[in-house]
Length: 203
Image (tube, rainbow, N blue to C red; front, side, top):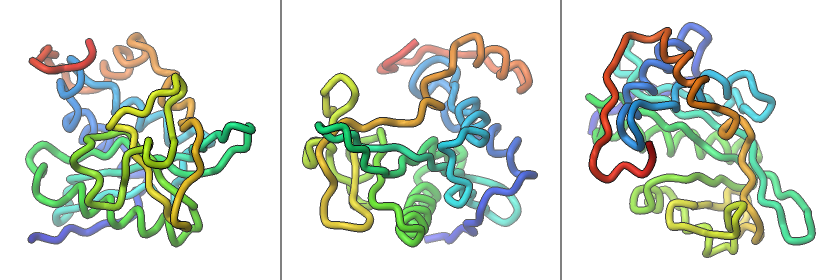
């Protein structure tokens, strides 16, 4: 299998990463995408972890990106158990299913463990992430804010054998974006038509 160079994102990479993220998520979950604006704003948010902001390269071309932010499992007594969440994980459409995403996940999780983070969580494709050690959040008693634990909510310990039960609390950076924000930001990119595709959950 082809190998890719993985390194920390540099300031000069930022626009390329945003363009890559836009391409990777365009029309996937809803018409258009907002993940590129999430990337743009996350970099300046206090929860962002620059030591876990990686890109994958094929030669000199950026073909993948992964970002991490601080999160917590809020236990029933109110105690916050700090963990990390990764996302967006973006792979250029021409490089999907070629090992780029897997390389980024494995590399970044190892670095997160080296940095001393106790656990990681994500919301993503339920059949993809168990290969890296992720389990359904319900296995630990972890739920979302509404008390649900859908298949796409997953977590894994990094510094222990388990994680505490509680409510997964993500950074507000993921929830402070409006459609107007996305439209204004998207105007700085080349025009692209939006489509609603069968099976899309939103939009």
